[in-house]
Image (cartoon, rainbow, N blue to C red):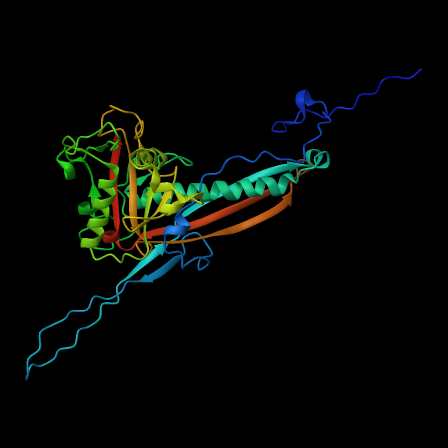
Length: 358
């Protein structure tokens, strides 16, 4: 007479393939459904020449600013007085650190055709990059995150070190380069209301505080022209809501014949008013965001940002990645740390606009 023998493992929290503490012989498909990933754009638009020059939290990278040269009139007999060069420098301090840590159980690994460790490591790298994008895009737009892994949603009133120019605010930006409703006849500190120039919309003079999306982009280009910002290297980051209105205004903008590329690492358009255009879901979103039509324009809006490749410097690296055995279970633990810093070097080469839909 034989007794039925059942093998069971003690309940282990966090292991989805051990329901009710009993071993479940789940066979994993070799085809893994990867999560959709947001395009990362910060590395493409910032000066990352300092990558790899850091080792530990608190390290600083010295960034030298181009000296300003004074030109004077000369006439015969004039005594020439040479100018002392001001070797102004900024400290790009590594003051941001994020980490990941996960555990891969031996049982899960043994009964799966999927390399969980590699799969989870790839996802962790994406999550670190996504947080990096959200923080840096918020910083260069004048906002900060209230919670990790979310778009910036709070005005940044803390200066990172010293301002690059004396006229910059505590957010390190120039007020003259921050577009709001007042720039189009509306109320200061309110978001612009954007309206597409659709076939049925023949109004050539929008109401005060309202304007067309292409008009905002043209204004950004003009402001950068007036600051003598080099046209080579200009970029513009838009969110999907703004992109949709642009498509409504002129669907040809994003066709290949007109310079469109489709969504490739965030790049959607090679040239628009002199900007290389990127799309990102990581731009600042305040309140209910830009798509909530009719909402209070001073508390519910999105922010778009334009700049130049030299305007913001970043330095980052995955500082530590290690794998070790869990002393309390049969599992491997993988953990890593991402260190980075960011600094606005040329606020005259950054332009922002707050907006919401009509």
